[in-house]
Image (cartoon, rainbow, N blue to C red):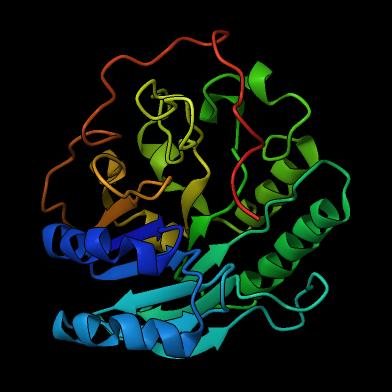
Length: 289
């Protein structure tokens, strides 16, 4: 079973990339974030093409902002939109949807950005993560959390830690909140597979960040022990970030039980000439809202 996650940064804008990518990579479960469409608009836009490809769809969206979805061709049951009793800003946002796919409880999440350290949105982010932890803890042991968590788990997950001083995504409380979620027994399968490799999933559109490989690893697949034990390959599809009209995020691909493309490396294709640390400043604050 191939499980993937991708912040598409507007499903409408990404249709010319998303559908060919599904045909190429043939994922069985797809977690999408930042769809930026209401449920009705998502189904009107993509319902037909996805059904033709054998996918059932669970969506939780809103106009213009946020929005998450799960596409599955291995079953889709017990769908829950949002996090029960989760915090809002000020109202609950479309940032989580969960369903049972192929015997695994799958969570597609788009964690709040946090904006600036110690802002109201930052405290909302921490509260939201705590609520997500409670939801996952109450679920079955076979679970996987996929999505844009808007946190780089460690300094190795940003191109230069010095460039992020004073920004969100790297602060101790955020990383601790993520660690508390992982303390449920969830394994970061990309980092487990590639502990010493430079691996990013997000590159700002501006300042040539992608071409210089000046990125962050903020899109994660966190799997419980029974699921993590089935991982045969885990990699970032960097090719989907190249070319015309890409998202600023690349998909993360995890193969369970068998690896159709083999155990091919942490990023496909690998970056050509990454810039070394200490050479570049951020063109803006880290991504997302």
